[in-house]
Length: 268
Image 1: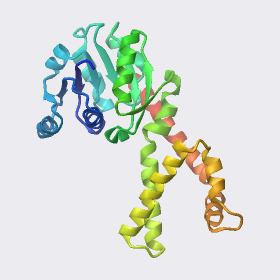
Image 2: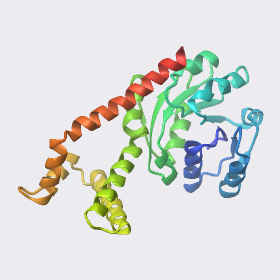
Image 3: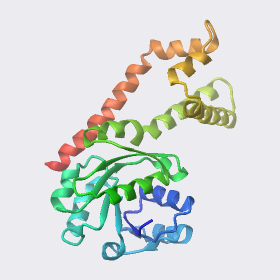
Image 4: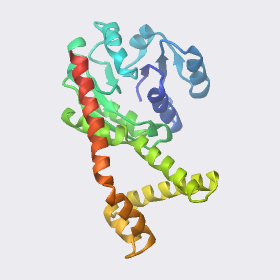
């Protein structure tokens, strides 16, 4: 794999680096971070990254992965302006910023817009990728290889990126919240906290594996667990009576709407 430079060392950048090293990627990885030099030192000790300046990232990296907060992207792009060449690939993981914003500031520079999730840290990530107008085939493949090293990938058109964000980008938090709530419900039902945690956690993992490996739809798997007049049906009826489907649909829409709102804010 080509040399990679990370601008930003937050949760997402760190997750991707952890994942790459976990699967044995030995490419030179440089990281520039505006603050928190102690974090950079820990990453150097744990993952063999090279703490670097922005100038060193530009000079030595064939692939530059932009992993800063959306509010900081424009300042970073201005710092990169007229300093990159078309043989360098810029990959962004920032939410809510369209490709044209990058391509306006960096004309002719290949840009791939991505939306990964933090499960990349345990090699179970799901990343959507959008190809910019200047991206060559080998550059698209290089971007894909980075995220395939830490999970699954899906190339999409940019008009779908906010919907993808609402499902997989933010999705882990939904499952965490449901599991957290299930644990609390288990405690209320009389279980010890450790017991409820183990039961909820292993049930989530097992259900996910069934969806992945059984070849059956989630609806079919649900039906197989649900006996007429049984205990599962009693629980499911509460979800249906309180419109769980509507609640989830509204939550996903709120996430998508916020991503679209961020795009508009960025372009104003």
